[in-house]
Length: 410
Image (tube, rainbow, N blue to C red; front, side, top):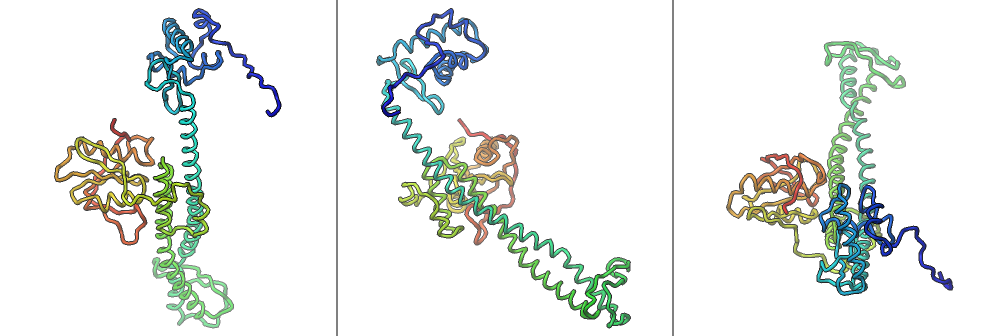
């Protein structure tokens, strides 16, 4: 704090420089990494886990000799701090000190710059993704509400046939009913149901014949509503499915470039109003033009090239532009995922090759952490994109299905 004397942080942990090997061994209980990091100041859990991995020593099932090796290794590294013998290496998503294990020497400024640059980049991706996700979730909420209203209207149409039957039964029996009758209901024989008696509600403010006309009018109104709303439901379900595919893309995106492509896709499809789009805080990377050429992921599978789309625009590209009739197309069955295309170039892939491609397709789907995932595959010639369909939306036929565990080749 300003104008305050700096005081070195107090800690109840011990100084590793002041202990010997027997004392060190006597203090270890259970997990080596947790014990050391909790006992000695300045030593992190990550550092110990890194040493255990390089020395091939288990964290829990260890011997006294293993602990001596760990003690000697830590002592050696600490005694060399300040010399050119210590380096910093990546370990997982973190860093660790190492002794002559890297050509990169201990340059604190470089690693601090590297750390904060990566952190800034990650935060930019998270912010960008969250802004897009907020936009998509808002759209999902609107479409879901729209779909609920449509389903409510369709439920109202469930009585459509009853209205027609009521009108026909009243009309068929008008000759024996007093048209001046004013009643809240009438009982007639239903010739649609083995002449069983049926009670038909009536409006007692109008005549019997007008009740029949009223039922026919309501029937035609519900029929028209049913036809219109059924088409609206298909459109809303397609829109909902498309927005859910965007959510999957956002969850899978790992770079600004990939997020740029998704944002560009949203702009091109006019899903949202201009003022909604303007709320997306764009990264500087947005100011440049998104790639004119697509760069899907590629895998070499037994000499064949497998293309994997990272978003809907790439999915359309590899399926409709890159794919030839003899190529094989893969996609998880009824599960959101990437389109995958195996370029065959006139050759016939073996069953093992097809199985590996199916595993990759399962890996790049929402079923990534599942097992026994169904993956459909067929010739690219059997995959069609309906006219006016949203990006990434296709229909396919003549498919076969494999059940695989998601995996990518080493």
